[in-house]
Length: 217
Image (cartoon, rainbow, N blue to C red; front, side, top):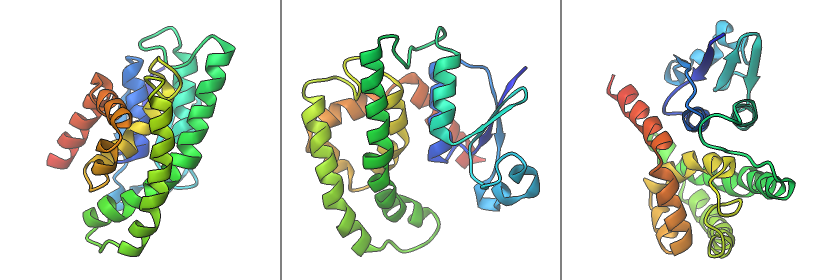
């Protein structure tokens, strides 16, 4: 019963799942769904995810969509394998749950707006909308200030142990580190130290190597 991950190595949501899989040392097959060719809208893929989005995780007769749901499944199902990404202690797990909610609803909701304008539009040959950047930069600064205060007392987003909460941040941190937003990270020493450490993890470096190989094809 092999594992298949349907997605694209340049997709942030796919990268999130791949990073979790690498942390758990999972053997899997990556099935390329080329977003540039709109393969995610083809009937064969829509049978896996009717919303036409990557990634999709398949293990036997189990099919999962939504990257954060997939990473939670990986973390719980393979709890005793690879890097522990969740906690047995209920209080620690509660802090991790909060961290994951903050990532999804406070961090990513703003980061994706900036990433679209400062990174993805350029890749698609579209012009950046400066008005959107100017609107969301101060909002992101406020979020990063909250992170800076927390990370001044904790090494990671759910305490002093690397966890799934940190994995969830990796794609946006990587993308924005290639834009002028990197300066906003560097201006906050604890945020920057956290960013540099988690993006240097072997799991994430494997994701970046896969991305590079894909782009060079």
